[in-house]
Image (cartoon, rainbow over all chains, first blue to last red; front, side, top):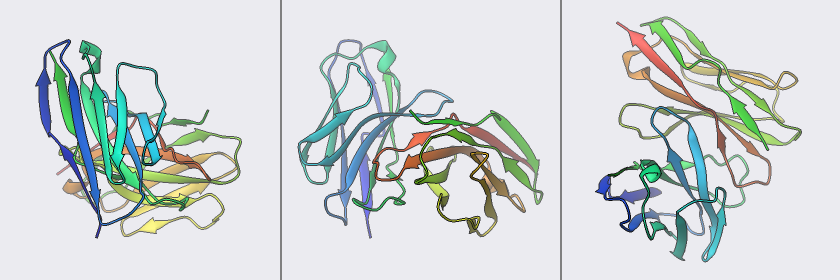
Length: 114
Length: 114
């Protein structure tokens, strides 16, 4: 069966510090991968998605970047965090080539920028 | 761009009773997919139910069912025989056919009264 791992679960970082959130998927090949951000009490905003190694699409201009160094690894990064980067970050995957494939989410990372 | 609207920020239901959550979406596409996700206090995103736009029959998953009105672009979720474990935030989501991205509504918080 497929599993998705996302870490860390919580993170407190000062403004101006770098960020690296990691996500890995097991049990499937060539998944579509996604990073979403959820502000407190709000819906999910798509930040990045990837359909293959090295292929990253950005949905929202911002202080963040994403990379996919391996087939089942997706990394969210920032060189210098802003206060507005605080939020709940969710990684997700879906099956390639299946339109009705739902997204399967990790447990999320709560990021607080101080 | 597709827009998903959930007009009810909060809903309350008595245990064992039924509650209906509304969702409308804006699209010019004929091929698309709709989903309901549940986010309990643990913040894990859990797929509740999915609906293919080409299917006229409403999807059902145990106590969860949808009322899909394609012409009205409406996709409501009915939770029957509500249980305390149903308390969560519920998100409606839209995905265009042949697209990778899932767009979410702002969510509805469901409270279940014992």
